[in-house]
Image 1 (tube, helix red, strand yellow):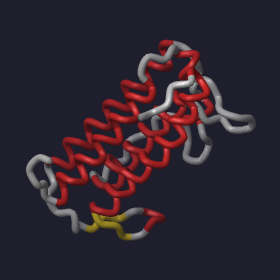
Image 2 (cartoon, rainbow, N blue to C red; image 1 turned 90 degrees about the vertical axis):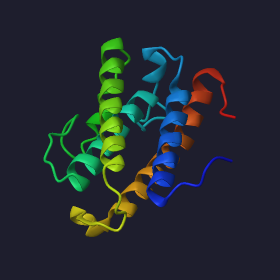
Image 3 (cartoon, rainbow, N blue to C red; image 1 turned 180 degrees about the vertical axis):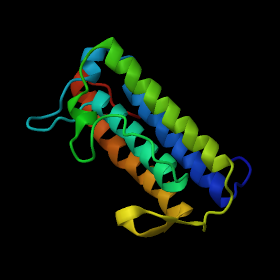
Image 4 (tube, rainbow, N blue to C red; image 1 turned 45 degrees about the horizontal axis):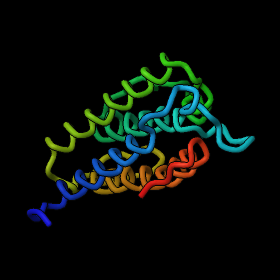
Length: 162
């Protein structure tokens, strides 16, 4: 084991490792494979998941924690354009990964600049939240979707995560 981390850095490390696991699960697939849907009527695909996670990161980091009002990346809330618009083209894949990287990097920077995990923010319909709540929720979001991603990857080419 390495050195002991403080609370913020522990959460950042867990989030970073979940992001890396997601990238590894998607690695080596063609645009068509990334866009392959799970089981009808679901629109879930790995590419849709990249887009969805970019939108999730954007919402929590830029809107909730940073207080900004950035436009959504893909359509209005609850319209599922992040999932529905995931088509198997290189352009769509490149756009999705670029957005995901930008939002993840923004989150990394934001968290590295803020030490107070007890700082309270307005979570909109979630009510008052502290930074800890948001970061733990992001870890939870990735953990949930990693299970989906593993199953999707196994259907595509038989690869199982270790």
